[in-house]
Amino acid sequence: MIEEICSNVKGPIDLQLASPYNLIYGRNGSGKSAIIHSIELGAFDTAFDAAGKDVKAKGAVELLAPRGDGLFCQLTVDGEYIEWGDRSNKFDNVVAMAMRALTGNSEYLIQFLLKHIDDDDHPIAIDMPGWEARVKHHGSYRKALLEMMASVSSSIRSHQKRLRELAVIQEYVEDNGLESYFVENERSSLEVQIAEAKQLKVKMDAEALIFVKGAFGAVEDSINRYLPEQIGRAQFVELGGRIRLSLNGDVAIPSGVETVALAVALAGALLSGPRALFILPDRAYDPRTLGWLMRSLRNVLCAGVFVQTTVLPEDYDFMSLGWDLVRV
Image (tube, rainbow, N blue to C red; front, side, top):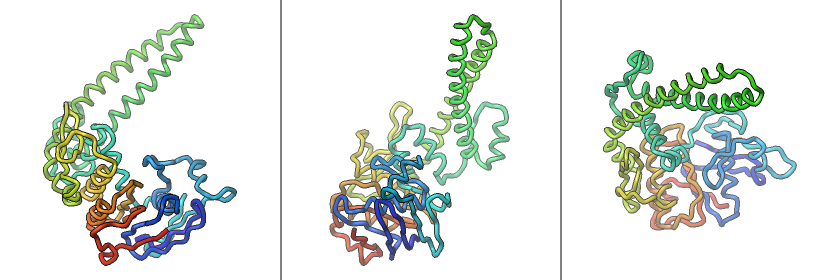
């Protein structure tokens, strides 16, 4: 677990932690986000803005330090030090990973499930040379399909980028009265390759959807073990070949707090483990919902939980159940 946080994010921080489960409590502007940013910098080598987007640019991250000071952040983890900048890769930001899967497009969610579901492998038929050899190399049809989907998508993007470059070259060649047959030949070849890759991608996307749909029931059961019943039941819905994770089958987009609850449950079901840090995004949690979420979080297998809030939970004696209250 994280035992100590030392940083100068928005000012000096030297905080001892007594539990993996931490409720960071204080009014708005009291410094809760500074503690969270310190954890993010030490654990993930980046920080996240209010929308949950990571701020990778060094110049932007360094603005978190007081003016004139260099940014410093150090975590003590099981007696060892990790610092911002050392790229220790010791933890996974699992709630943020789950949030991206929930709020991204259907293709991203399918690939997320394909990567993380713990499901029995079964044959997947892809009509392409060397498919079975790829399966043998990766040890499963699921892993081979995931690798091929990433490879084909990358190839399409690369070829499309080259087409844009050729369009610029073509314009220059024509403006200067030069021969352009070599440009036209390369463009024609790339267009054929892109069309073929897109056809293969359609087949792979269809197989991926079939694969993950076969695991929907088991995944829903796992998610619902970590989702407060008062909030609802997780259920996958399919709309025109696209899927999303809903509450109670409702196609309406869940509220911000409901999305956080779904992300926590999805992370608990598929991403929990000794590398997992559950850092909840800053939301206007009401006392009752906060209590429900904290009950669920207490059951996840993880390296630590950090919840920032301006209220205390209702009907949940969290201090007697292993939580630490960090007053800011």
